[in-house]
Image 1 (cartoon, rainbow, N blue to C red):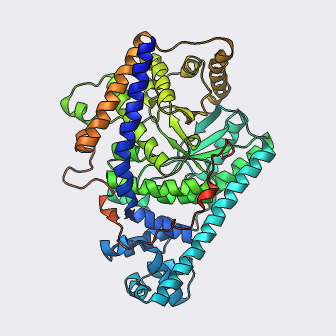
Image 2: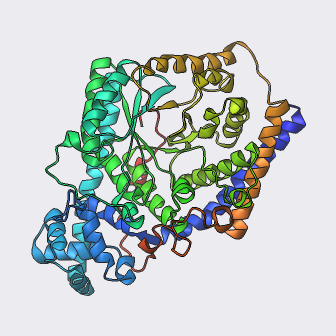
Image 3: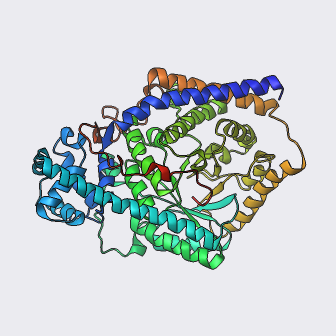
Length: 531
């Protein structure tokens, strides 16, 4: 790479970040002025509402659904103050009141009228503050527990090698995790089950759950499952002399609730990306961003790290035309989506050190002929997202090329080590390769100590430039034409219906913000790897 080539790449990378930040600004402003049914469910969870309603549906979901039926004007003000007013009126704690509402014994529509009385509104404000203080104390206790365990158990240096478990019960997940940790896994990730709202919107059948179900039989990514899995990983860490991280991945219409659960159950890394939900599931963009902003506030408080993927591939125009997209187009679209997600996360005060980003498109690891493109993909992300830890993650559903990790030596040569290499649901027979993955990454990084490496040249440089061009064009298109041009209607459930979750978002009006004055901003300094 000549100095001129290098300067052009740097200039275009800088332009992409600037355009992504400009695109994120109105998105964040609109999302901050919104609330959603998922946000209000998360508020109830912060108040201490948990478990299931007599119908078998989650109790918070049942209560918020009843509240939302009062109309968008009621939802726009938030559930917090009406709920607190009702708790005072009937002398019930949050769990008792939620159960009474689910049974139809209390109508929050009547309690809203009580808030017009200054004395009762002040009392409701005080109750909300008390409940939230308890929630913040619980989050802070888990931050402290994480730090203390890291001090006592120690921590393996990066790269951490992680394993993504197959969806299963918590008991089965714990058994699988034991075997993986014994062979060198430093992190276990489990998927959060599809949320009830998403399944209802999609028309999927939902079997009623029961609180009587044993924790070991609960889905590994549910709150009860995560409680069991977190305890099991702590036990494994004590036995093996190192802290074992727990990660989750969630897509859908419940990001705020999942952020609450992550804080309550000491989840270390949370994979939640609004743009992936928009592109891959067809979630309404305004809804996805409103949910995500609330989740970011909670992650900031809890100390959990945020993980963003390498960017979803929005290829509706090419699919509609029947023209196969080039790798540069695929990569550029993904890079633009990733840059937008990064800027949104940074806008809420998360430090770069706590925002992990995917280093290469996941499907790149499934095509042997494309593995050589990993070098420019990694180089672009190091150039664009300085200070952000990188993650190499295998594709879901499609098998990765066996032994792909030997390319890590080339991709990481002369650079800092990635934070995490995540393998998809490896079997016990395959898990022995976890040590090989670590050695490949360490070998590449060690080259920087013995020789000076140059910049990109040849096909790698050409791909990097074409990818940046495609990314810039994508951001310009989003800024000028909105999401329709990239998404079209091919990924909608039905063409005549609104995008998923749109009806669950409203503009705030007279809203009681649970974060206003409740979070001590001075607590959020830059965190080291202890998080």
